[in-house]
Length: 470
Image (cartoon, rainbow, N blue to C red; front, side):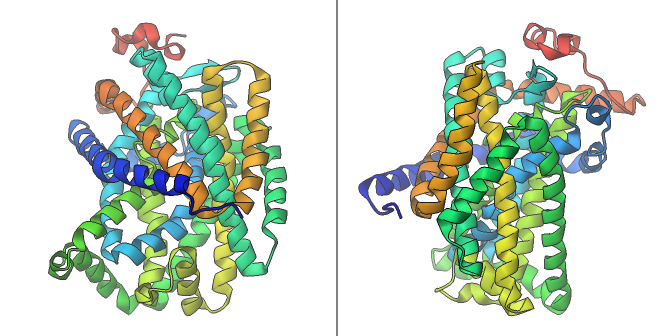
């Protein structure tokens, strides 16, 4: 195992805590509230349209990435270890009230996710038979700020393509070792082999695998949680009361823990649903749609799927068990113990399998995030090949043998800087997302079932809208 308590890890952790506690959380909340008001609460008013758009046939009709496939890839990267281990950690540290603040930040983040993914569609570029885009592209072509776009692309490669794959690998190997006694290095090598094979198939293969894995794992986990809830239906009103009271309770305020509850809940929620981070827009840009707003709405739904559905499943299982008060349990161990208390010893095995599916789908989705940003920096094929080997083989095996503290310290700092870059871009360009939403709603009110965007709608931005001018 690599050393996890050295001076580098301590420094990285302190720097990241400063960024998140004093800068990014406040900026994300302010941006989320601003986008919510300016879009007239799009995440609430157009929820039905979000669900309807999952069946948009445009991508399948043209044999390109469909709205649902783009949704599946983005959810695959959102839904990962944070939904099982992260939620447990939030409850263990911040108490049941942390769940409430996770819900709040997801609701606010829906508007942020809408803006960033709409912009990604607006400024996407053609890449052979597919499309490519994301924050690096809309910062470059929308803000005309190349240096910031390059910084974002590099941070995206480091965070998702490299660091986050090691984190997912580490969690898979730990879960498999705990449940079945499998050797970490052996599991890491197998993950590297399978994941690299899928990654070398490009975005189409990644989208296909994700569109199969994501519904299976999300529905399966939701059904399990529903079974646990039904078995304990008489406790549900008390659970909701516990969550709300802990979020605002006088006891927490008097004890000085209310701030901790809020901060932990908000931070874990942001880490989980990624709204504002700039990751989902990379895959949102690949979808073939007739109007940019379509992917904005679909990706907003992804935030809800991650936090309001999957994270809530974990929270209910843990709170029903009552084991969150045990100071010796935290992270994935708390989730496993909670399931064991409800369904018996098979809980540990189920969580290991769920973690495998969640984290593996995140690994293959992360490949594309990194690759899309390499393509922004260079068109040399050998660079992409080297990245695939580093991301899919080297970092996955590294994650299998490294400590979780070490890989997370590196990942947290990269993610904080990544989010800061993206917030600058969407705050500056958000005005275009608002106008696109007005255009979409105007066409819907006029009776058009399938709104279509034309570059002439935004004349001042039209010269930079490469794809939409074709």
